Image (cartoon, rainbow, N blue to C red; front, side, top):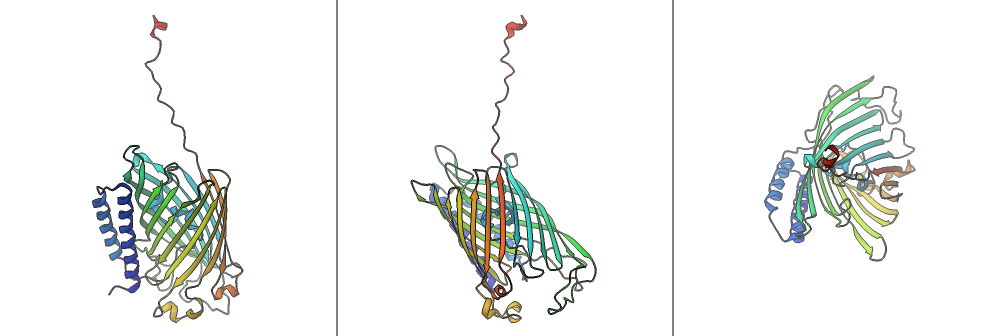
Amino acid sequence: MISLGFRIIFFLYICECQLIVLISGLLTKKASYYPLMKGFLNVLILLLLIAGSVSAQQDPQLSMYMFNKQYMNPAHAGSLRATQFSLSGRLQWVSIDGAPNTGLFSINGPADRLGGGIGGYMMVDRIGPINTLGAGGQYAFRIVTTRKPIANTPTSVLQLGIGLGFWQKSINPEWRYDTRLGFDPTLLNGSQSSIAGDVNAGLYFYVPFAKDPGRHKYWFSFTTNHLLEPTLQNFTTTNLSKVYRQFYAASGYQFKVSKTQNLFLEPSAIIKSDLVSFQYDFNVNLHVSPLVFGMSYRGRLIPSNSSTAQTSNQAKIRNRDALVGIVGFHTNNRLFIGYSYDYTLSTLGQFTSGTHEIVVSYTFPKPNKLPRPEFNTIDKNLFD
């Protein structure tokens, strides 16, 4: 029997896909692309139907997901129509021994000869005695769903992406649990390491600004990470450790607040789920060139009949996780630096001073295309 969590994700996904079709239709009043959208919808429904029950979320947490959508979704690669690299670092739950620390590097750019964009990423994460290294390459196929009839410029684009890579987990033998918490009997003694292949897939739909195709007025992202749920051999005594499948649905809209000033407001939201629990972030960013100010609220939904809820005091932490403040600075049209601080609202707030995250991204200018040399313009009289 399909779980309630699965049905909720499935319903939200169907609604968003139909919304994409509706928006594109309103922009052009044409439906020539509708069969393509319907066919891709059926394919992703099939992917969702093969998803089984899963357990705890394992992917790193990022508060400034809206500034680094490539790691969240391989379909984002090349959508900015320029080469961009990003660096992110996160110190979570400062003052708690063994709390997660994450570092992330990603780069992507357009690949017109391949019909879309390509990218790559590397992620390092440490929580307690477990170190994780993830890396891979990404490819996104670009479909222009609507165009302006006269200028022939794209007004909406759908990108379908796939990522291939690996995950490696290792145990630090020198790390020790707090004796008050005991030891995890499933972790093997000594230095252990396991590596497995990984597959991610997703779609990214966006409406670019007419005067700046690298900025997206509206965007929607849906991703299935760890599609095949790779198993980590010889990592625990149970030998059942795996990287569980994760689902991400995110969307954002940017609109101008003032016609006379460069002032934009961008609300966005993201839902993450392993089909057992749900995590959601609601965010609003105010762009006052060259500054960015933002605020987010993060919460969790854990079914009362789940094993997680039954083994912890969920009455105090359910639906509350963190309140996030964001500040950013565009030094020019290419370099962006952002910082966020998470104020913990759950009972963990008694033991931590919060979470710090920083992101630095740089967008390379588009190279000027030199004209092809003309070899037939030599004055032949010089050789007479």
